[in-house]
Image (tube, rainbow, N blue to C red; front, side):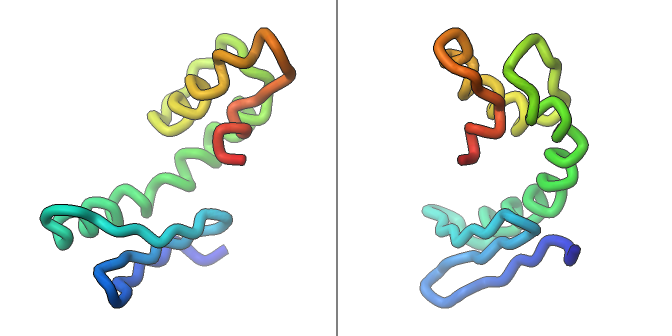
Length: 93
């Protein structure tokens, strides 16, 4: 799999792509600084999520996630775990 790719587009947009993640983003304010920060963070995010994948695929329980994104995914589905079978992966569906 190719690593993360970031490309500045016309119209003040940034294209970020890595594996299944494909984003086109804009920024208000200081665009160059925002895009530089987004590129730095984006390069690490898929690897972090892959390392958490076994827990992200299990029903929400007391699993402790290390990645802040994985924790947010779990937090997003936690209110629904009493009513339905749900895993943190639903946060990105």
